[in-house]
Image (cartoon, rainbow over all chains, first blue to last red; front, top):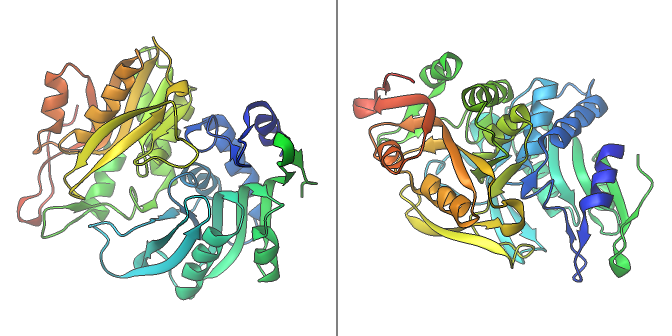
Length: 192
Length: 192
């Protein structure tokens, strides 16, 4: 997706730790026009899949998720990373390890929002090791629904998440794939 | 806002604890068409205020915030409730007490995203005691910017947040105002 790739080139910052910082347009400050275009692109790629819900995880997945849901004409659900006082029962829970934050979190979705037979599109801002996407997929499957696909804004293709998800049988569509961040340089992989 | 009020009537659930649960369309599952209309309504109400940024707080503020930012043609910033590993320096920090969760959190915004002189619209899903809105306003003022207004999706008008914010000089625009949740009944206040 050209618009997104240009934004990564113009505003992405590679930290010495190898982290790609895109907080000027994706995960702290957000560019709403870019988010709308991301939603349109996911909608275009997954139309015809009979999607009934979009599922993401707080917080950075919500903006691309709501725009995708708007384009597809279905609700968005965002998984929470911990239980809240107003969601104490009737929830699906999966454990997800974050390599960035070095903690394991419970991610939760209320049972009433995913029905058996639904076709769920998972959307997230980043794909690295795939832990969050696998956790979300396990929740969909716990509900007796199926994963129609996994839409990722930026995939770190040098990390194993994309391959692991595809080996597990999921369709993964990443709008931008990064092959390397070595030496502070952003190198893109061929885009689908 | 009629569409929102109807949704609260149809889908809002008053828990015995006096909590209004709107997780089917606002803060767990989200209705993207409703979110777009919320964004259009805030944009209509605050047009002419010279707004340069919309500021919200994760997670439930992000969907109404991104739709408002899209309509106003400005970026959205979402404050984080705790420091993340990729945001360790150059941040504004304020403490916010959550009566719902009974914890005090640090909320943080990167200094580089609010410049002196900016006109910031604060958007949030709920207003009860006003702690989050005051915290966000203090961050805007720390930055030398000004608060153009505070747009709230649902105000619990029987709690003191709205009055406290107005007494402090802020313009508060709530799309739906609830006068009472006593005895499990949702009673609306006059809407602005």
